[in-house]
Amino acid sequence: MLRDAWNTHADEWISWARTPGHDSYWRFHRDAFLPLVPSPGRLTLDVGCGEGRLGRDLARIGHRVVGVDSSLTMVSAAVTHADAGGPAVVADAAALPMPDAVADCVVAFMSLQDVDAMEAALAEVARVLFVGGRLVMAITHPLNTAGRFLPGPVEAERPFVVEGSWFERRAIADTCERDGHCMTFHSEHRPLHDYTDALSSAGFVIERIHEVGDSDPNSKWSRLPLFLHLRAVLFAPAPDASNRD
Ligand SMILES: C[S@@+](CC[C@H](N)C(=O)[O-])C[C@H]1O[C@@H](n2cnc3c(N)ncnc32)[C@H](O)[C@@H]1O
Image: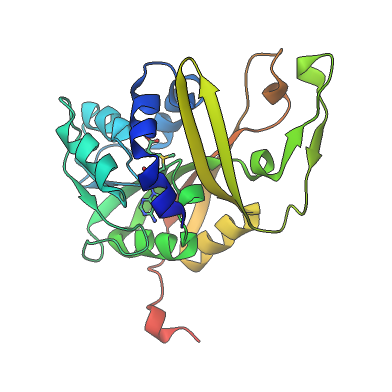
């Protein structure tokens, strides 16, 4: 399971994520993602909080944050950080240990592509939000996981090929080594409509989509999206699972 793979690699992730400037968080995400997050309200849940960096940034701008992650190692790192953003609990995103309608904002930052039961997790996010509450999420862009760049003489012009079927879900294990850090990212390639269908089934309406590429014109990722940021508003509570056909 993806959840177990992330727990196995938790220590590698913590040193990868805590090395300043090392991860994509600083270069690609933070300044684009934080403005999508609504102003602080009663409670912001950080689903798949990892070692807690986003919760720390949100707490600094006034959010009351509770983190949730399935990995005990991640949650321990989040709550013992000197500048911890708030409490955190060990739980699966598909079974959040919170009552209905407790939060006005949920962030799921670079976690839903790593969650086994993504649809169930989005239904849980809808359950714990007030109607009118927002989900702000970031995922690896499905185009990124659908294929790879072929070699080419000019980095920014390398052709990109889609391997297999865009529409088929498949497990991805991507090992990256950089500046003395090694990390294996376990996720699932899913077509974009898997996310939008799950959001709509859970009662969400999408407000904003931002496709994140590289602003460096010499990068191969200047032509294609690396990540997807999305904000959705809960329009209607998710139907009770027991009432579904
Ligand atoms: C790429 S990390 C992102 C962590 C954090 N949001 C950040 O960017 O710093 C993905 C996180 O999702 C967590 N995760 C994976 N499956 C999960 C599940 N089923 N329920 C809750 N968390 C899960 C992993 O343990 C990991 O901490």
